[in-house]
Image (tube, rainbow, N blue to C red):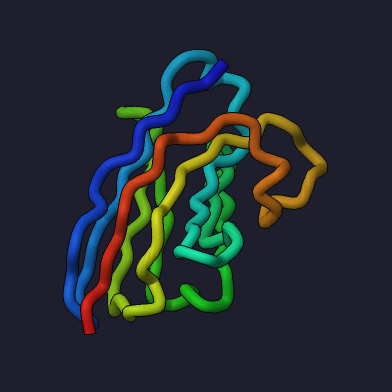
Length: 125
């Protein structure tokens, strides 16, 4: 099993930046992908970004491409989501998740096996 702990959320103004961190622990050798998803009140959980934990291959939702950057530092076993040019529509609870199975769609939340507790990101206009 893999446990995930997110940090770095908070309140920011439009145009500002925040960096989220995700620290997996436990059986991390089985981790194929670390993904970020978000869920706003009354909306479904949506894909934000993902990174191959060993390959470093990155994936982005169209709504964040060019503004958000996903990365990982294997030396400290931590993933990051750098969020720049924030917009009010980025307001949501952000979740980090680990995917263990190859051959499944990276952008689908139901293909992820372990989830963090979530961190709130609020962008004021």
